Amino acid sequence: MHPTPGLGDLPQGRPLQSEFDDGLDYPRLGTVSFRRGTLTPNQQAAWEEHWPRLGRVMSDEPINIEEWFGRSGHPTILEIGSGTGTSTVAMAPLEAETNIIAVELYKPGLAKMMGAALREGVENIRMVRGDGVEVLNRMIAPGSLDGVRIFFPDPWPKARHHKRRIIQSGPLHLIATRLKPGGILHVATDHAEYAEWISELVNVEPLLRYRGWPWAECPVLTDRQVRTKFEGRGLNMDHTITEFLWERVADDAAPAQPAPAATPEAKQPDAEQKG
Ligand SMILES: C[S@@+](CC[C@H](N)C(=O)[O-])C[C@H]1O[C@@H](n2cnc3c(N)ncnc32)[C@H](O)[C@@H]1O
Image (cartoon, rainbow, N blue to C red; front, side, top):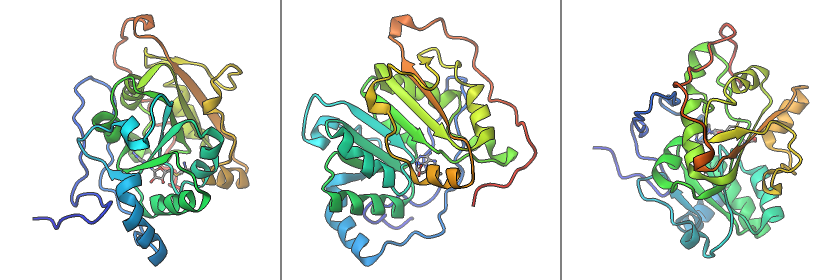
């Protein structure tokens, strides 16, 4: 028997992974471990006080967005992999009318974001601790999101880890089903080889119309006005930032489903993973 998880802790053991039976490619997360999982005393105190209101752990309970944010009729954007939330918290006041759901596995990252949001009086962010794919699948109703953001996802550069990448045909389909028609998927990476991988997948999902970058008429809600932490790191190393935008088409506008897309082949030998 595993001990009862603490507040905001993921259940012990292997992470929950849905079996998708649609012939598409989904990431295999494997066991997730983090080097430093502890919170500072201040973070711990804030966590205990505010997590029950601002956060939840991934589960099979669908999120009632209006109830959670305490308001109705507002657009909702889900960010997968918010990290320490530096840019999430900086951007949220610029889109105060939008509900932001930040999904992240890393507890100290969520604790840091919570602390910053509380300090800055930012009220339009809620947090889910868990794997973004599972959160979308289990907790987000179809056609309920105006946007999905994935900024600087882990590139998993080693060829044997490519299957862990979040941008694959399966998550693209899942994201499309959770977006409203007209909703936007925005992805950015500073990893050249991951950008090439994504480029090969831009047209695999019939429900997503690829809009490229830049896209002048893109609804402003996806405009990145603040640099993320990993973007800054990439720029310091002279990396090029590559951005991708897709628009969710209307259900009846999707072309007939093509054959399942294969994951792009590994293009380079085992490169070192990021530190
Ligand atoms: C390279 S960091 C980028 C963080 C932030 N977006 C930024 O630009 O500074 C990637 C983050 O995504 C998180 N992550 C990776 N896979 C995830 C998944 N399947 N679901 C939720 N978070 C994930 C990692 O824990 C990590 O914090």
